[in-house]
Image (cartoon, rainbow, N blue to C red; front, top):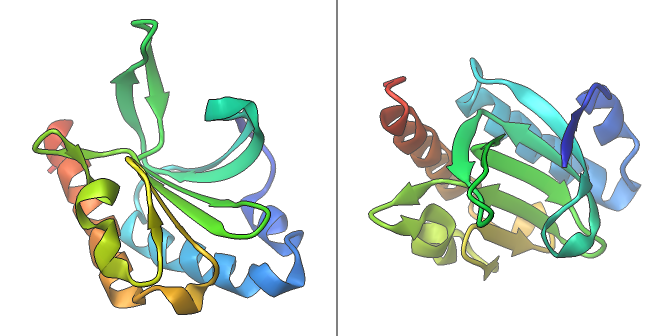
Length: 146
């Protein structure tokens, strides 16, 4: 995936009506926590080969399986066909934050580094914001930004 120069607010406005307000509310909540971090739209083929558009917040570095080190986002927000995905690319004690803390957010599906849910009403927004803050804090500490 590559960073796009597409305006993120225009991207959010282009989303289907039924999901737009939830995505905008999540973007606002994440942006507030990550206020002094970059906010970029990533587009292209994602893991598994599907085309994606992901709003990325903050930056981190990681080593891919091919040993190449790449810059990636700390927190990502994407709209799938039937649900919203949030990616937390931060590890705490050898475990991804999503995997470690995601189940406590509400009616969600948790992957290693992702949390999926059908709508904003399915999650506890206060706990979600606290998890984004934890992702920021862990990432900042790892990269000496704390």
